[in-house]
Length: 335
Image: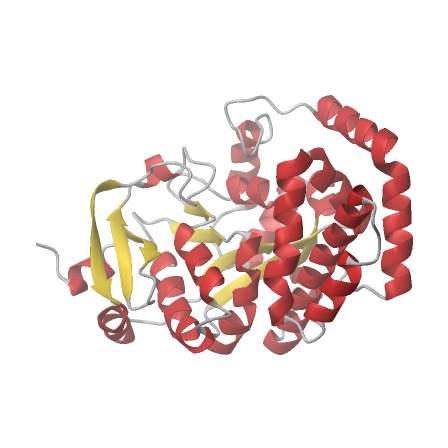
């Protein structure tokens, strides 16, 4: 039977969840080649082997304390901004492994408001576990943007080495509306979820919600509010952490120069991957849909989808943006 020391020493044992009291971590065995076949590790698909093992957080933390500190390479993002693509561009067999949206971080994000102190303790333990090199491959964690409320904890513990992926307001609106009801609902819930972590969050949320009776206009305004909340969190984290503007990556930059941005990210995250290797790897990645890799990516199809969204919702976007700037929402993306 594996001991706590064995599990902490073996990165094939991945933290996949935590008990509701935040006292025990759920571990399961994984293989890099299986993880690569899954767009996300958020619980929507099965990627582990064997039975789960429960270990006390305190025991795991004590075991980690005797090991070198790990600052986990992390891609933070506002959603819909190409973070999955960037993660895949840097997910190179034999070199690195992308961990996209681990479920355990979602559990922590959900517990922030009720148990902030405990979450702060546990998050750094989880970061260290996710940051372990596996089979000689450096890990790159791309949390869900739902976990952006963990940023104060990550900063306080200095447990991650991040980049910040952002998106301009209008493309963000297009992306949210392009995903239909499910994506809009998620984005509005994100605004509600993040509001407690911001000084003026609840007032902003209430004002945006009550500012219009038009359902589509309300959705657009709350979408912009969700973006604004995340950009504010990123700016505050960068200021506190001393992170340079070079670490801010805009969607348009990735769209225009995916290989160059991946190489820049590799350098900033201290990944030992040469630009030439990234360029070769990108030939396969860029031909496929990042979230649905069994499908081919078609730029003309994406452009047509955006045109249709603008045709149907352009006036809604115009009005929502006018409202956002009048309200003084923080929507700066240039670092």
